[in-house]
Image: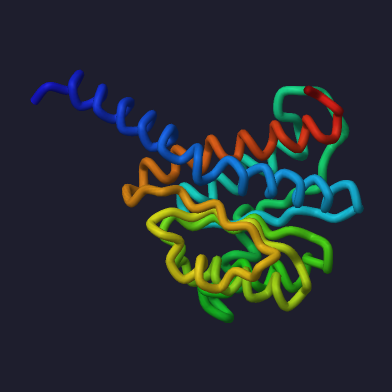
Length: 196
């Protein structure tokens, strides 16, 4: 087995996936930046959720907003719904795993807040429930998906934003999601700080 060739192929595939996504995703990412920034300026907060690698992405996003991305600025209101083990296990035990995020959205979310919903397949039941809860609370949704968007793509409203990576391989979708998250963080900072 030629491991160098295998590694090289991963790099090439990742780069091609990202380059192929630019035309389809640049405008919706810009719209998401404006939605997220508007939420923060108006005193709202961003709730982020996902499973597995997407849970890590939700936490990464919240950390960049509460801390900083690349520029010094005030703290920004973002909460990853993936981190409180007591809530996750209590809700999972008492109500079922499908509701670990939706109950937090119902408890923490308000009209004008934004849910950042991350699912590589677009079919994660607990993320779908979180989106339903966000809609019930009159929150906007920014959904990061792949594989055509799945059920999440079908349930989003006209005022939601769908950032669907045009790929089917989970690793490539997750790699692109991380780039999208960095674009969101950079764009929020640019709008808040007036950076060109």
